[in-house]
Image (cartoon, rainbow, N blue to C red; front, side, top):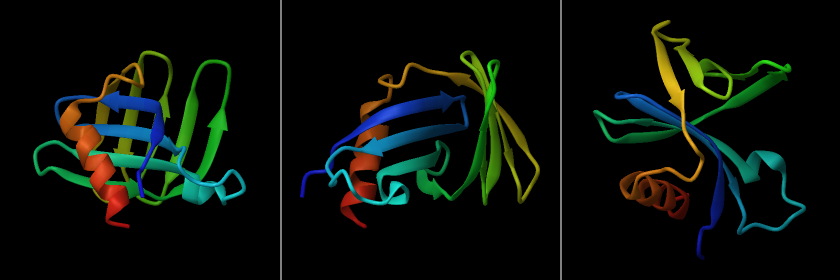
Length: 115
């Protein structure tokens, strides 16, 4: 099965990328948890993992996503991601959603094909 998706959000720095994608190869009536994915890519190790979505808040100035693994607070220019295990905070730059490296795109495709 071919995996297709569109990138909704992309945040990056020299350590990590955080990306939200929407799978477009699945039936329209599928549960949102199977269609929308937040992924964290650790550049140093090459690990790609899913962030388990808990809740979200949206205001005129910024947005917030809460995951089991961390907290993401962002606006149109930058994001702050706080890991809830270590309490380390990363400052990330907001990227255009379609500016993802070929290497990361390949990892995302393989992630879904392995499911």
